[in-house]
Image 1: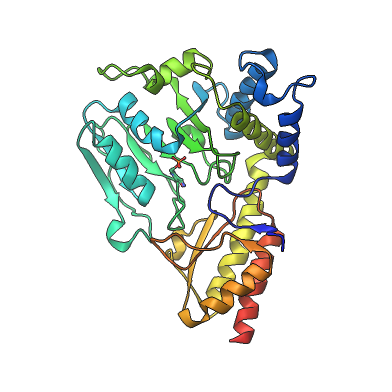
Image 2 (image 1 turned 45 degrees about the vertical axis):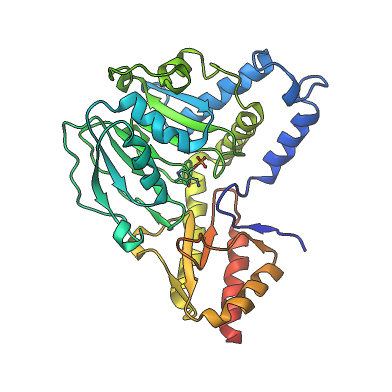
Length: 354
Ligand code: PMP
């Protein structure tokens, strides 16, 4: 049976046309040479890197505004400490909205005490704290725009008096925001951008160079900027595939166009969760994520039947994270409306059977 509807939380669904093109490049990228066997300093790859960096800024509407885009390695997990190494002098404020925020806080705490401006940890992160204050003498404020595990998403961002840093790993390029409110955005590729192996960092240059510590070269944003994101050998396949996905998104009409699709997918799944008495949403309604819908069965005795039904319908990757349980439907940019309809059909079929 084909697993045609891929709801995996990440790595996850990518556009078929992108997979087609990137697989072709493995066999023949430059006159018979594979993308994987040419120098990263050769013109064809330098062009890919430059295009990828330019596309990221273009899609986010940040060209000519003092930002630089980098494609680095080590995942978002490395950014947790890289942010602190580059920006933390005295104290920073973090909004704790989930496992990934918590991990970011843990890494930053290696360098100094961190102040949690707000936290929903005691409610197992089923909502986004509001009404918090960010002290104006802090070095920066850090938040996570979308909480992949718990299915919550920040709908509003504060007017931060200090540089605002955001982990957008699981909702980058999915909705329109005023991205110029942020001074540093990072996002692992493996959700809306490409395969695992690279991370996009978009940083406003004027926030750098203000800490007194010595920063190891690989951890220093300024070093990566000065080398055009080529300080060391970049992950060529991940960068190339990310470039293709960004091109795909641009051709589709950019973030504005995909946001409409994402809103439609979210409306379809959440109305089923709310109308079908067999299911219950996990996140509070006002903070529900457009990317990851988390829900549980009201009656656990139906689990076996439901699991068999969605697998039979060609659905993949629906199991929830162990810290929430139940189910998680991840609906990243490349997941089609038809896939969401296929899931909703199974959910309503379960209701008619029960
Ligand atoms: N932040 C968020 C919001 C994530 O969803 C993830 C991974 N799922 C990470 C950080 C960690 O990313 P990585 O595995 O690339 O280090």
